[in-house]
Amino acid sequence: MTADRAVLLFACFGVPPEAWATALTASLPGVAVRFWPDAGSPQDIDYVLAWNLPEGFLGQFPNLRAIFSLGAGVERLLADPTVPRGLPLIRMVDPRLAAAMNEFVLMRVLHYHRRMPEFEAQQRSGLWRQLAAPLAANRVVGVMGLGQIGLVCANSLVSLGFSVRGWSRTAKDVRGVQTFAGIRQLPAFLAGAEILVCLLPLTTDTRGILNSATFAHLPHGAALINVARGGHLVEADLIAALDDGRLSAATLDVFQTEPLPADHAFWRDPRITVIPHAAALTEPTTAAPIIAANIARDRTGEPLSHVIDRKSGY
Image (cartoon, rainbow, N blue to C red):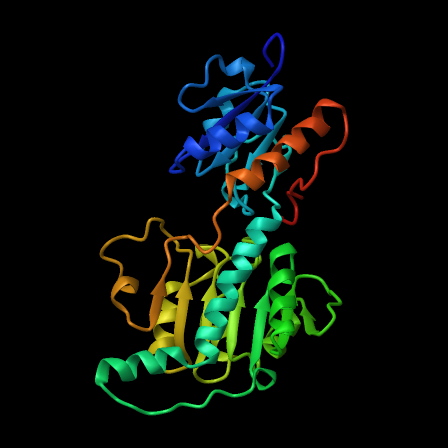
């Protein structure tokens, strides 16, 4: 901390800082905001707003009090062995972020529910043929992950009349949603899920969970929507499932390597919709006040909100 006030460093690699500069300055009048690489003295830095940090980056700041993630995921920070174990890692919990993800999930679920890929294929072939969609109540949508964002999406799908089932690590009771928990109940959850939405945190237990064994439990011709993390998907298993008809289509917002390499097969596969990790972007004007409120709590000795449990990974 400088002589008169705390210091927050914006270190979000690949994120344009201009909008954040305006929002953070307005929300944090009592905090000095610096932008990497203009960090000044490393000893001054109390807080870092982080995204896509290279491993070991945080080791240069000896007086850190907390790390704020720009997004909901913190797996990259958890995987960095140089991050002090006692340092609070705070995930972004912003209702605006959840709302944006909800919009995207609903859009893609409706896209598959109303058979839009088939209509688009017919247009390319000049084919005029009406295709009936089932009632929403007769369409089963499976939501993997019932955290803050998963619950918002599941509840919205229920409100549209879909038959919704949810799967999480521990048991949850969600009105209007048939819930399943734990690895033993995963096959039962998957059975019948014609549209599968992944909103899981990326942990040791969930890495690679979208694989051939998982796909084998889905109904023939199911659609996949992955808006969680690229590490959830075994990419070769997705191609195999599409080739044998187990899956009919997939929407992917996240990938093992980002940006997705130009020569990657996903770009050219008409069955796969590639989104450049843009399903829900953190909005500076709503996120900055949330960060400011947490810093204010820390400065007055109150517990920080949304601190990651390192054991569970979220």
